[in-house]
Image 1 (cartoon, rainbow, N blue to C red):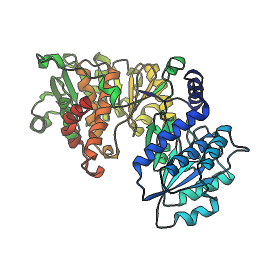
Image 2 (spheres, rainbow, N blue to C red):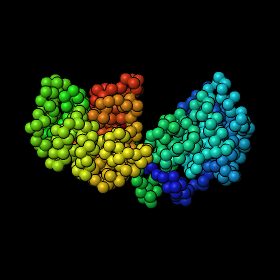
Image 3 (tube, rainbow, N blue to C red):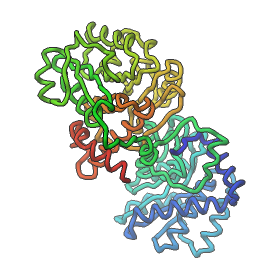
Image 4 (cartoon, one colour):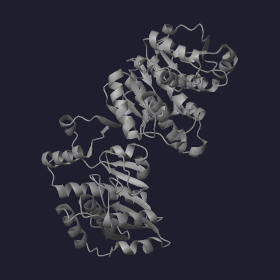
Length: 494
């Protein structure tokens, strides 16, 4: 996992590495910019030309080093120097000297950029004006440069952060919009939260060799979870396994006319490996459900006994009726195993003010609107994630806040941002799939945090693999479910 540190701590991490590796600050800048240059060269062929916009701080120094490496590799490179502070940092001045010593002299002014970028050539703008340490809105020459770049049709690659964006908070003012952001060594909080993350385009983390021993000095509160972290959670099955070792899951939902939701949840649960699955729904749904999910058993909602099961998925298609709310309350009050609440179960909790019943056995999976119904209105996802952290600790439950980088927040209050997934998941039914996946892993005796992390990652990873051969618009929840076994196998073999 990679830590998601606030920017003051990122500076301490740099300083710790400089002191303990040891390495000079200019050498660390060289290492970071070389890693960025290599990634840019991998991404863009020599048909592209580069305009590197550099401030006179350390982010601009990174840009100057990138310009030098691209120039020495034979790319056509222009540099625009932008004044963002009274005098350049020593690292920036050193980088400029080295660029000039390499024989580079193609500098342009901000005023020349509009005409330059309207040419028919394939321009790539490297945005290295302002970095992640910004604390006030840009103005003057810096703001002009940002506006000029935003007005162009060029591809924009930001070094560490798009210029003008706050790294740790909502950005209410004008800032650069990038197609690709190369985040140095670790993600920044804004890159992972909507709408700020949208301005980053695609974010890639570029390792620059900061020392991992620093984690012991400054324990992170937030983590970024990727493929290699998730693979270690999986528990291999014995050749002598039986279905009774992998739990019996109950999926509750499917009011009249909304049977599809509970079908999706239960099919996903079976694909994720639950030993047995029973669906509790309206009696009128029996034939629909047992035709769509022949692997599952069926019980009437009125006669179900909760405590026969290892875990419960509660809510998909349940409806908002008084009877539905009563079932949610009864389940919260009587079931002591892992209980995953989604969709209508969350709406019943909110409308009937049952939030205080969400205990340590509960996992809730709200999207933005459901979250606000539960915990009050918020103006941004920054606020929601602060509330989620507080409420997970106070209630003792696990919160899965669904977004592009879905966040798992256990009762410890740590936040785990998920690295997989794409906009193909932005469809009705994909949340029902995730609910069933989490509950399935809980039935198999995975701890709640492990179950959530593994399910959330595989949910997104399945969509990522589908996106390699399908348009995002065409990916549906049934595609996700059918692809889960292949995603699971590929995850373990990577």
